[in-house]
Length: 394
Ligand SMILES: *Cc1c(COP(=O)(O)O)cnc(C)c1O
Image (cartoon, rainbow, N blue to C red):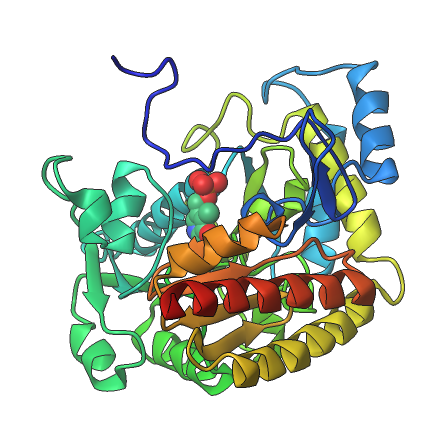
């Protein structure tokens, strides 16, 4: 018999009742160290007092009005995102996939508005993940997500990750832009080298294409800058964010330059819930935390500690870990054993980590993680690796 909740997820056999900072607790009071952050979502940790205050205060004022009226919370959030990014304007959504849908529609509309309606295709990269709507599974191009869901939405041309010649060859008269994650997340924590992002920027400029970043996972402080692209200096025309900006409340956004957004006039796009007062109150509180003096620098310091400890973990367990990669607090362990085995062994040690493509285990702790948390997590991973080694020796 089918389960009451549609069985599309492979869930671990554990449920959490409450959380605080980097820890989550079962109803029985068992504690787990959270190095997954609900897939890079709980950026400020669980139940951060400033976020709880922002949400409860807003909840006692007004929850929802719709986008038929002025939205002061949205305006404030948009202004702050603009002030700290390349963007001139922002559209709010409830999720990452919707932020990507807006980005894709905007790129097409831009080309149409400047007299090139024939340019509607986006170039994407193997291993990409952009969401689960019909258009975003086509953009991601992964067979396992497309299979059985009918004809793939047209308009996406995928090239191998890091293949510059294939990329240049893929640009044609129908190309509208290039869509890329500055650090691939689901694909297995693969950072795009800064010089490659700069190369993409130059290529887009030379061909009249829009450069679109998907920073749904790598944005909002995850790499130690508010946005991952800042490390390269190569600015996009359009960028999707979500996950960490809500700190656990569902909200996403599509950021754009005035030029790229020129086709998106009144009536061309919309969302009932997008940017509702609860979501923007929480996202503004998240930005208060991220933009506080020294916060991003502390993320960079913690990231260095984590990277060093993971490098020595790999040296101690070459039979389990093949490679350590990533940027900031977005790290991947490429495994020699099935990544699910390391994930389960970590869970047995009460450490939450997340699987990814390319047989990788992802470490995405809340950005408020301490050095002591990092030492504890690596210690738990050390035990997990030893347990795997002991099992395979037996
Ligand atoms: C999670 C993710 C998405 C999709 O976000 P949803 O909120 O699940 O729709 C898109 N792009 C990237 C890079 C992601 O990590």
